[in-house]
Image 1: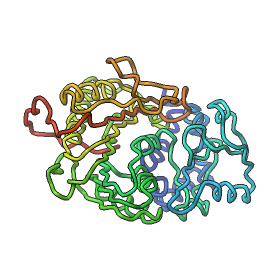
Image 2: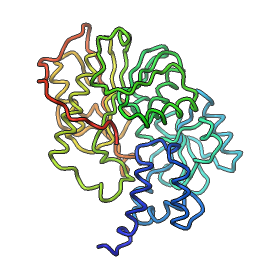
Image 3: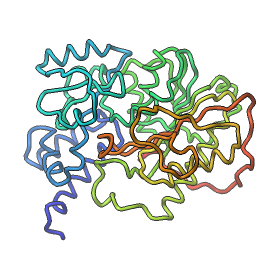
Image 4: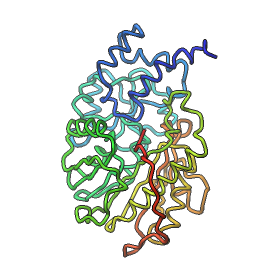
Length: 374
């Protein structure tokens, strides 16, 4: 009903999430935040979210994850810095339940990812020196999985196919230790500009940003002849994002899912056509099988035995849905099970030698413009 608290919050929610959802937190315009604070009669950024948290506690179950940017510092130094700021370090977590129990000014080292610190959900680091200087990246744990599982060797050439807002790109650079080359693509000029600023602040070097639809990138271009790793996180329904505005939480229509899945299959098959590719990570922030296991299955069938699914991260508790034989090699994440946003990750590797082409070339159709990442 129109008079419900949730309905009354819609305008604020819409503004906040349009500004923040799937974008780097530092990209939120300060002037816009200031206007929102005046309108809501609050003084602090976190006070803007208080009514949201009260109305939609699901979003509050996810802790504040902080990825230590190893291009600028190390985990031990970051821990010492936070301890000097009055935070209490509890060591490495032994279970997801320990993460769930965090409160006050206590923090843990994540049990799965070695450079991830975990704080209570309400913790705000947007004004923290480590954040503003690029020493830490505010990034959900599930969003850290793609680069971590791709694990490119230092000196490698890597493509980040749908790169903005750049958190995964900066993570790739840290894993590469700034040795190698990252080719990052996105279609949105403003998001690329924001991304460039973010990468510079994070100390990332050896990257090339291009405002280009990845589907138009020629795999046979000599420029990409040494690309052995690709991270592909294409546009999706975003159904796994726990901070979605409620009206957006309604399941997408079958037609919308079919269109997204068609695009995802096309872009995944295109990524596999890079001749030197050895390892690829496909990820989405979607909960829908149509965008996840079904896409991976269709493209693997299309490519025959040229690529295989890797059993990634065996200790990760949530696996792919039993959509096809081997789907349990994929990873899933959810607020309930992994205390993260909803996410899906599949790791593909070239099987044997050669550069096999897909069995049947897709029919050429006029492609609708797809927005890469919402």
